Image (cartoon, rainbow, N blue to C red):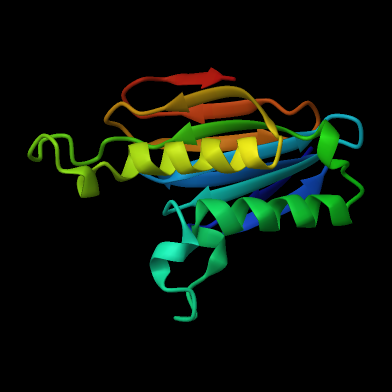
Length: 164
């Protein structure tokens, strides 16, 4: 039976097989699942905002809540567990339009889109291949990363479950 490890908002966890990393309640946030299939090490980051540079840098903010610093930290922790960066792949979920009933064109309300774009940009910078995504729409998600095989289970209330 695999160990269940919960990842809080603005948090990240890494682990080896047999573990299931889970984060609950992704709205506009992005769940970034990273996986090395050879050593079966996975990492899951619950990203809240696009970039730490917008936070002013020296305000003591939690670096795990940002796409740029959160992904860097997840990669570093995975490498500490013998993952090899060139083998690591990514799957992402979340980035919902939680304020879809708000005024069109208000870019500050497109947090989900901005988060998804920032995560994809950072993954590209790090040369991490994005294998699959389930982003956008107007509903929340709970996600599970299974370290035995890298499967990423996305669960929703109104739209069922799927594996990517």
